[in-house]
Image (cartoon, rainbow, N blue to C red; front, side, top):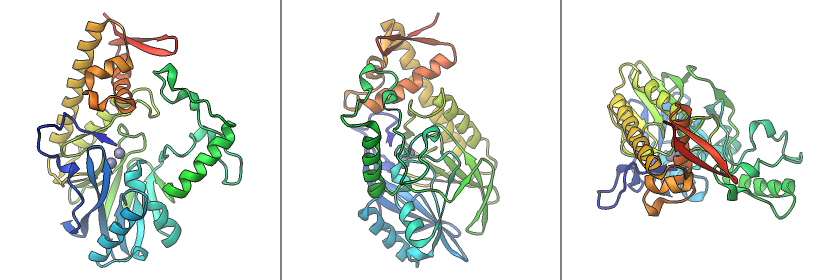
Length: 355
Ligand SMILES: [Zn+2]
Ligand SMILES: [Zn+2]
């Protein structure tokens, strides 16, 4: 779900790509780091943090769905002296499968509370305004025609009725993915007491619209999810709600950079680190450079499609929907700040610089 900030060829492996270590380590009093295996582009593990308290343990981001990740989670819990039934709470930082995987099983089988941001919604769930009331009701299909708003060829015409198609699709995915239904949805600046600490919830949209970080102002600890990673930048999708996800991301970076007294950052991938403000600034600079590349390409091309411009921003091995989605997010940002305009050419969006 993330992309390397720069090409990884001829460079040492980034820490986020390291395979999951099996040992569990204490990173702060009562806070343990475990690693669960994943194999996604640029990622070799996801950190699942254990927050210990007198009730048992809360876990943050319990990995991918499926038996391999579950077995690893049970093994890591055992090393720390726990069984799945000791997990009273699961915190899911955002709606990507490498973060919510084990949450549904923890809730359904062991009665764990599942905490997310109020906006938590996976791509397998229907949009809020088309929400399904219950499992037996005939669900409303998602807006197939808006899969990729910058491409005319991205509309989807299901061969059978849309309702049936969506119902089959959703049932199959639900069975496999166990999309978790949070039991507690929090807003920004709520207090969540876990591991003997009072964590403050921080809504940090950008990577996803529902991204949640937790901040312990007393000990200066931040659980940063995918919002701030140590050596790669999170994918910024043009497909999230909101007109300008890049501005939302910049605002969220400023928000965490302004936190006082942060001494330990616990990311969802890679090693814990210390300089949150410095890393947030470096990520902003990375995107500023990407915007410069786009401005230069758009200046040379005059008017160009998102696909065409994405080829200036990404190496050929990365071309495709994710590269286009991130390019689209950057172009929409340029449009939002008045530096570019778009026009619809037979269903394909074309962008050009203004002035
Ligand atoms: Zn993510
Ligand atoms: Zn992730």
